[in-house]
Image (cartoon, rainbow, N blue to C red; front, side, top):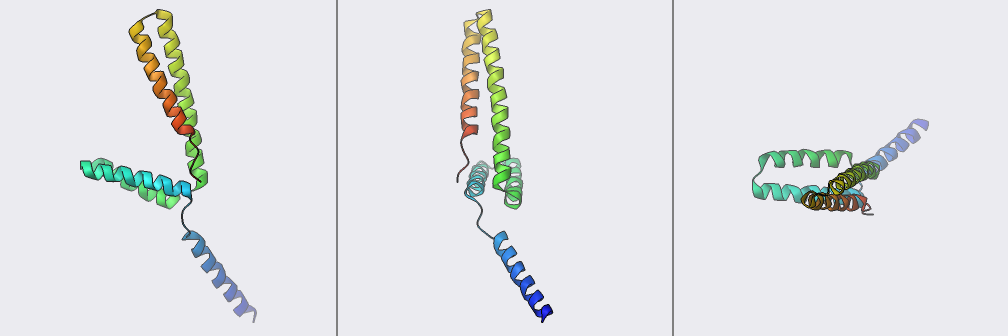
Length: 128
């Protein structure tokens, strides 16, 4: 009797595990997958074989390993990198202002604005 009960419980546990594994990906993972697939479509239209190969590898890795925790970690890393870039660009702008070269100042302001836009984009919350 115990053997039948044990095997029944194991069967139920295996079915539950396979159902969980086949569950739909989270909204954040689905969004990221859609972004990769969109880029893949553009690469195919352009006929860029190297980009196609890289995006197909990225898509396969994403499908195999995506989790909300990994996406949040990537997001935090992008934010940190973007914050460092903004600080670097602010320093470059300050140096250009100290020298007084209008062309360099304009160029550095443009690069700072670009870095700030990258930071804003990195700070966007993940889709829920």
